[in-house]
Every structure is written in C-alpha cells, then in structure tokens.
Amino acid sequence: MKCINIVFSPVLVRWFYDEVYCSSDRFPHLLSPQSFQICEIEVVCSSKRENPIAVKKLYFILQWSAFLAFNFFLLLTVYQLAMKDTSTTKIGYQAPVYDQQEEYDPSLLRLNSMKKLELYCDSLFAEKSYRDTKLKFEEEYPSIVTAAISKRFFHGYSVYGFNDNFVAALLSSMVSVQGLSAIVIPDDIIKFPYAACSQQSILVMDILRKKGFKTRKVGFQGKKYGHFCFEVYYQGSWHFFDPDMEPDAAVLAAYNRPGIEFLARNPGVLETAYRKYAKDMVLDIFPNYHLGIANAALAPKASLFHRVTGFLSYTMWFFFLMLFVWARRKLKNARAAVGKQPAKIAVMDNVAYPSRFAL
Image (cartoon, rainbow, N blue to C red):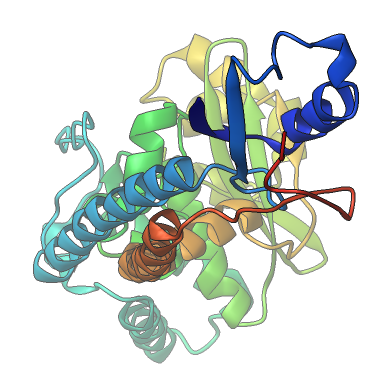
C-alpha cells in the first residue's frame, strides 16, 4: 500500500472532504485498499491567500530598486551641491547668446541677488533726486528699475539645470512640457545673465511691490507671436512698461507713459516706440492683450512647483533610503516565512477538518 502527502489549497480540502471522504461510495476505486491511503493533508497559507515565495521576490525587487534609486539621487544631490555656482543647464537646452543689439551691460552681473538689485536702483534714484529735487518717486522709480533690468539681462529663457534643481530639469526633459523648468522665482532668475520677457517683468514687479506700488501683468497672444509685460499704477492711472523689448522710453514719456489700452488704440505710437522691430510683428502682438489682476501672485503654480522640486532635489535620496530600509526588513520577514513548516490542519470557514483520513 502506498502512502502519500498531498498539499491542497483550502478550496480543494473542502471539495475533498465533501465529495470523497464523506461520499466514498461514489469513488470506490479511489479509496479501495488496493489503491493507496491518504496519510495527511497539508495546507499552506490557509488563512492568508498569498504565496510567501512570490512575496519574497516582490520585496527583493523593491529593495534593489530602492537601493539603485537612492544611489542615483544621492549622486545627483552631491553633484548639485558641488556645481551650485556653475551655469549647467538642462539636457537638450541651448543657452541663449547675446545678439549685440540689446542694452545689455555685463558689468551689472555683479547684481546677483534681488537685494543687491534693489539697492542699486535705490542708489540710482538717490543720485537723480539729488540733481533734481523736484523729481517724484512714483513717476521715476518704475522707469529706473525697468531700465536697470533691461541692462542687467539680455533676452532668453533662464531654466533650471542639474546644478540647481535637477528634479525640475529631469521632469522637463522627460515630459517635454515647454516652460516647465523656466524659472519664476526672482532670487533664482537673478543668477543668470539672460531672462525672457515674463522673467524680466517678474523681477521689476517684485521690486516695485516691495516699494508699495500696485502692479499687474499684461499678456499678449497674437496669431504668430506672444509677449509678457506689466503695468504700474500711479497718479490715478495705469502705466505700461516693457523691459524685454525695450521700447523707446522718450516716445512713451511724451504721452506720459500711457497704459496698454491707449497704445492698442494708437498703433502709430506703438510703431514709433517699437520701430526697431518689424511692423507686422508689433501690430500682431500688442493689440491682442489681456490684463491680470492687480497685485496678484506672480506665477503661483509654477513657483510652487519649483519650490517643491527644489526641496526634492536635496532630499529625494532620503526617501528612497527609507524605502530601502523598509523593503529590506520586509524581505527578511518574508524569508523567515518561507522557511517555516506548513501547518498540518486545514481551516476553512472557521471549521477544522481532519488532517489524516483513516480508511
């Protein structure tokens, strides 16, 4: 007579007990003395429907994935700290080059913080007001800051790279969303020699708001071109400024520095102020404007995204380290579970079934 051990799942144990053991007359050839005797039934994982070997493999893969990610992000963080003062940009981005036409002054690169820029503008106004005691602060200071920004930067998007916010740089390269890594935080924009129209306007508005001015953005979207400027409120009306495209300040001053509504209704003034640009470009951009809310937050969503990714650029390695430690502990427990002997009693629906069927 043969004696075998059978490892069943709980469902098969229930079937065997109901159909074979309790109704042996239905299967006489199976339970005849000439066939074999079932000595015991072993049930593996009767209470939890999971395979310890599969769980062990899962935690093994998770552990090594977390370990590799931890090392990858730790190296990027170390590189970011070591290369913080360099100008490394994101993958596939060609840094802008000065076209020798804008009012760019490389000597102003010493103004590498918003505080230094503000103090520089204050000194320019103090010098002018010393020579002209009748000079009014609210009329002159916005023009001083706008002119300073025009000379501090030449046109081109400043973006995050692997030396300052590698998470934003990686996400921008992976998802190919235009502007995802374009900087909107003033203290980060000021570190570059170039800035786009929106970035230059953000810097001016940031300084003017600190001085108590009310500002609002002015966005443009023509059929071919887009642009970004701002307006400042003083003397009971809004006044238009454009630090990036640098319109002729004397032409605008002749009309008391009007707002965009006046300029859009008078294309001749626009063409004269922007005469260094093609006429069709000027008339495509400026009549098609939309106004922002006064003193609204400057690019709030992009600013939040950059602050979060900037934080993760220095701390992401720590989260993967914690994941690695957790997965390693779980793997150790899974290995111990695989090494245990299976229970020799089947439990199904809180009913115990015999582990040995005597024939």
